[in-house]
Length: 492
Image (cartoon, rainbow, N blue to C red; front, side, top):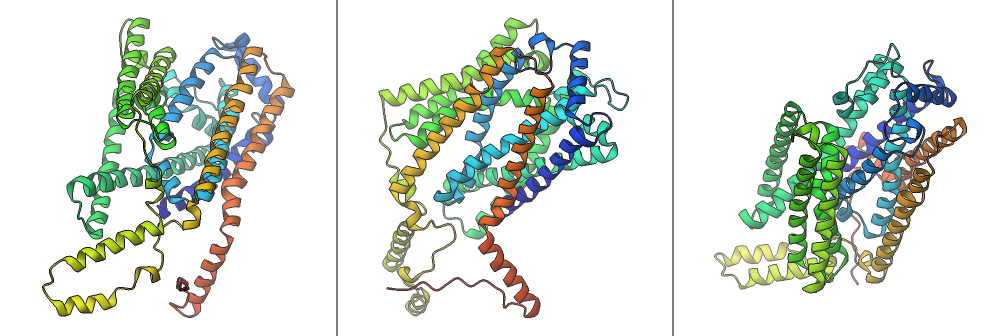
């Protein structure tokens, strides 16, 4: 987990640096574009030559886009689905201190939005603006769906350097995501399958060995799946819009499980499965009704994917909620709060010692010797992964929950309703001034995001970083002297 988090941090820092290079190249230094005014001029020309069906006046400079609205709905459902179903997000939340988890996820979400927002404003518009330029290679619809407009625009703007920068950016993004998923899937298969059902008495060495096997197995699986998708014509764009059909049914059941004590266990399971079935049926029926044949191309249309996404998340939510009202459970969340509690650990250790005392002894002398090596539980240094008792205060946790819930509601209303919908219904085609405001907001947002996820974590961890640096310096002059030693707990 520590390696994954470090990987994410370093990759994100480099990723933002590359994004800033592209931003300032497109809007400041490039001889092909170089300014917001020139970008506006090129986009107007592109709309005149190739008007966009469903956009206001066929323009690229508008929020009035029928296909954009449909994609927005699919995008929201699909991202809800991937986040709620992704074990990597849950691992980070569970590994974080309760006090910092809410702040980290809210700031991280706002910072993340700057990447698609800024990248689309920069490389997405640059790919459209440079269409027809001698340095811009023409792209087929299949290549566009495969995600090639941005790399092609980067190569057109910066030549081989741009292509290399884009390759590095994609490598960092893919490896960061892959490392997180490898650890997440390995953890599920190791602890929730192997240790739970196959070998409950597995030793730490066995668990570690199996986790390594699972990492390798899932890596091979991903490679095989990617190869199959490539050869059957399933593009990145198709997979992106299909996420909600496959995973959206579990969004509401999972949300109910972690926030509502009355959520029915059986209702949530049935809701997730029935929503998946409903989503696939709606997707396939819509495809057959709107097209003469069903294949990868026809099944990836906007309306086809929209129907599947809406059916999946809707049916899953309705079934889980209705079932929970009809046959509610009564779950006590004190059970989950106690998992990493020091008090809970003490009880487990005491039970283990009690069991050992009751067990028949083969060698009483050995047993006596071992007993002298076991420190009393109340004197034991708190282990890694055990949450401090003060961080489990019910009042503080409830306050953090309310803050997270209200923040999510407010941000949802602002970012999904109050800002985009009025701009959509206004059907405005933006002039140079409006585009300038849009670009400036994107750049400022990216800078604030980079500060939040690159600079601010260093400030928050300054004490630990100083301690590590001091330890390194000590080791340089006297090997072994810089090793961290946990403070001895004071016994009352």
